[in-house]
Image (tube, helix red, strand yellow):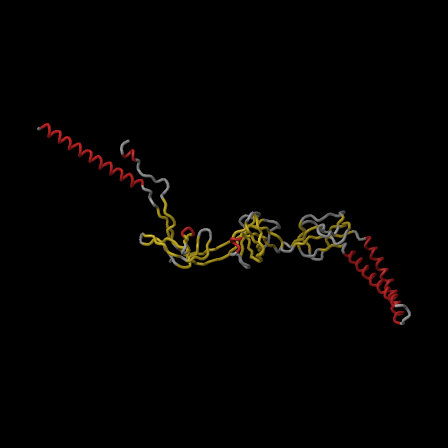
Length: 357
């Protein structure tokens, strides 16, 4: 009997040990699971007041507003060039002279022919008024006088064209064609002797993507930089927006011309990195752009209030790469939920270590 009680007691102890072990295992497993459950971190940002500038970026090329390619109206040999590259010239200043010897002779001959034709015309005019000659003879004299006058005017004009003058004030761009060269006017592609540009008035030709062109308007302020002068900022204003589209690799662009307000130091063909100011808001209610979401009802944000998040519909205005203007729906100081994520590098305890393995 004592032996039976002893075995029963040992059996009870074994059962208790098993239950204790099972409970401990369950406790350790539950602790392990809760320790390894991803921790959620809530990132928030406050709504605050500040200034916001919305802009459109583009790249363009600087060019003079007034630029003239100088060519000759007649064929001739250049005998003298009065200017050099980078010289400043004034409208009417002599740039190039062509050989005029044969044209001077042509003018003398044309002048003589005109004098003779005029004398003959005047003589026959008197006779015709008296009815002393036939009408046809007088008409012939009048025609010869008219033709002689036109020939003389043409000869004088060609002689004047041997002296080529600057049509505008400006700077000589590039090296002029040197003396000794024969020039010709050309019809479709005249020979360019030199280029004169007014460097005081510059503009930027740029292309704006169709997704941004609706934001751009005439008169908007522009700031831009050029690689030649790091750290220096220039000012401009939008002057022309083309209605004609340019398509490059299936992307639609529109040409926008920007007038440069101060062109000191700028040179033709420089690359301009342009920022068009399409809108400005002063002391506006601002929220991080990443906080604003959108659904079928419109735009909304998640606001943290009393430890709970709630969706709040908002009306928005201007935006840039980081901030967006809130027109209605929020108040200064509201805490907005940006994201909820598990912190990097966090991990729970190792179950094997807990179990002693």
